[in-house]
Length: 247
Image (tube, rainbow, N blue to C red; front, side, top):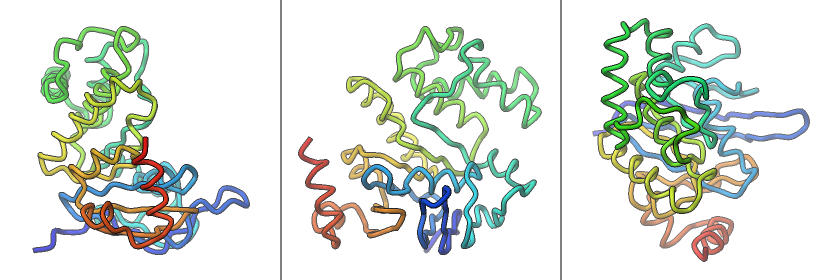
């Protein structure tokens, strides 16, 4: 049985001045699905998922998330961001707040949770990302991998229905990448709907239900990982994989 569609993008275009970042992009993400978006730098991957939670607005086409159409300046975008968690390349933690405070500020201010409930939720998700002992520290006292795990826990504290990841390991030292990917693999195992922009192909093979390959603002190929990695249809995807899997 096909699960309900959570994100439906139809013929999206997006321009930055004269530069077309997205060109006629259509993609549907279903509940509980894990979609990995890959492609060369500048192919529109990050722009696409930033559209999915209203950080960028599309210029043409139609985009619905949880059945709500996203239109520029819609008051519904604020509500949408509560339901769609986002983890960025940079951790974007508040440096003057402790880890626990970073995790509770959103639920308390936006969801109006009482402090005790927000802290209980925060500790649950710090446990989920395997750093419960870091609750009282400040971001500057943590490694990059720990900071990114805090960022994942912070997004989870809003109890989102979808999680978006924009190259979450690209700013990390190599030895820290694994600890973040392990947390993401565990999260995928819980049935969370996930859209992940990444170059980590080992992770993609392990968790993706579908691979989406983009180039020059277009979706060139969509395939299950076993087919995408063994027999990509497009020459461009094959070249990309040859280059990235060599390293």
